Image 1 (cartoon, rainbow over the protein chains, first blue to last red):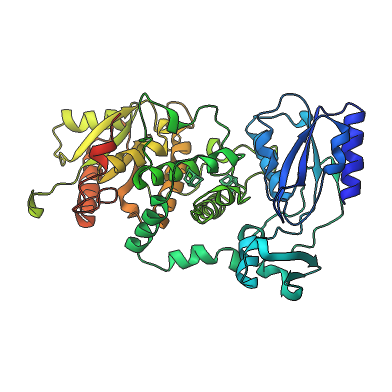
Image 2: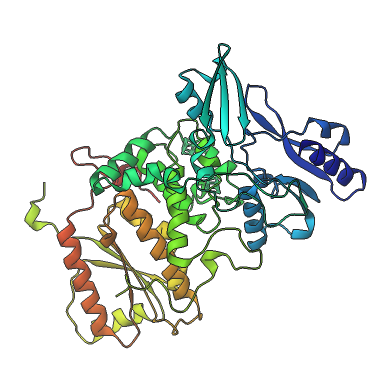
Length: 316
Length: 153
Ligand code: SF4
Ligand code: SF4
């Protein structure tokens, strides 16, 4: 896949079909990648595909001028489609290089299984539906579903349906929808008061860095409500009440755009369980309106569309 | 300290100017009695209601919020109330999941001719809010911080 990606990306630049290529290159730390944004075909050989290509690169699309070739996993391609639905980008300006995604590896799950910090792990390799972890020269093997991100386990579309180039036929992803919602169901099993204090505790840690918003491709507003001062909707002081309110509103604003890519939770420096909000909203929208974000570029965005007969039982 | 028995819920009404606000007006001019717990804010259309307004009201210490607009098919702008319906629906669900009693978020269709219905809705909602009790979500008891300290704007 990697060679096909590099050949394809190089050709796109050489033929002048795109101004930029956005993809992944190895990161400075072990088992990480970092976004590569380039106009130079000599950089292309740095492009990689591996189980650590976590970023949803579509967040850059609204910031770049010109035509862009972008490497996209299933969820990323849905974010792109969602941006097209919202008229934030034009389909003809984007060349989608689709990766049928086998799922991404969550290093914190690896650390738990290996009982070691990621720095002390020597190697992580995927072999079919198993993962092999090497620590101190010792090999350990686990089913791949034990180390994939929760959002990958719940993936609705590992292989992009919207693409210009597809790097292979289909994805070998093994999902596990129950594990994917495990944390959420755990919360739902507690009382109203317990749930509220859970979120109070989570948001007491928030430092309002806005990393969650900045990585989110669905958060494309040029001016966010948190920065408005007339009126000032929420206090800029990071206290839990306002932190919580910020995140709730953010999740409501991205409802029907959020593809459960998991980036918000990964970006959060204080490990707030943000996906437990995003994924729940994702499922609420699906339950009430049979709407999944970014599935059909012709569909109207969730919050601007309606059906005459729908979810009414709560209205007096 | 106020006595518990004296406590009266505070309800924010976000009423569309074409139907529900006119309905509230009619309730007044036809001298219908309804609880004075509702504070009314006129909005151009129920479709103007960003869920942000609902959260802000709860954050400021309102015990409940009522979003009210024209009946389906009667929106002055054709589709505003349908959009409001989707927004309120998802807001209620998410807040319930987070630990907020969903009865704090209410919605109704009240036309300009339904003064009586408006009075009934306010009475019913007020009664429910009394059952739930004061909103202390953002102002944990005894801490005395929260809405007042930071709710400017
Ligand atoms: S809210 Fe989180 S999971 Fe959803 S699209 Fe944004 S970054 Fe991805
Ligand atoms: S990334 Fe985490 S700490 Fe930063 S604003 Fe978002 S929730 Fe708060």
